[in-house]
Length: 318
Image (spheres, rainbow, N blue to C red):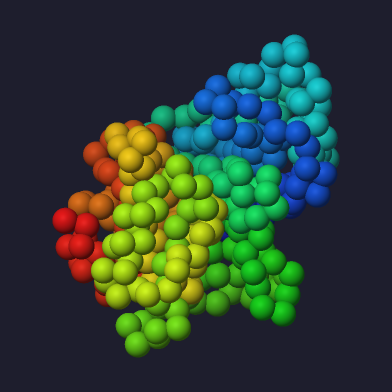
């Protein structure tokens, strides 16, 4: 089965959302707070609105499992924030109304099933607020397997051009990257064993997102001597897929050992790495379960590698 249409719609939607996010970032609006107190800006909501509208128009029967919803945004005291979100969305969809925007956002309240999309409208919100790395991540899951993954990374460095890189993959077709500035698509591959210069290790900037002491110990145990490169968001998957790093570890934090990852935080990145020749599992070597629930309840931790060192990493973790 061809997924060309799905890939094209996903690319166009994430690039449009990236334009909105960068416009918001230029203005740096005050962050709102979700119920769990993590920061969320009008960019998250505007990004989700744009992408959900695009998917729904072409694939009207496909559920979308997204990170955000419009419950808070509909409250009277949030009228100013709703107006801001709508104004930014209008930059990409000129005739958008506030009512449409909230409806589009809530299209992301779908359920996992035989075929569905999962969306993180801004993965790495803190990186976004710091003017650092973030990603707009969208993936199609069908019959329990990620079939299409697209990540727009507006702050990802591009030699001799402005930052901004799109990473994408279709199952069985390999992975590619495309600079925003040139739209030139290039196949990507994980780092080879003899490329010692890129035998690096990436991890999250936020210490609460993992066990940094253990992660560094594991990296050293498998022969990676350089200090870790700390990077927000699924851009880390892009670094591994494009051969700029050999390993990404996200091990449970000692402060929250029972934490389980959300599917939208990993699905798009996972297929990009796998199609680039790498491997993605949990810390016990089990495949990540993107098809059962929004949270990967049967998995703990995430190990992303060039494949060559993966079994050695898993053995070190034991």
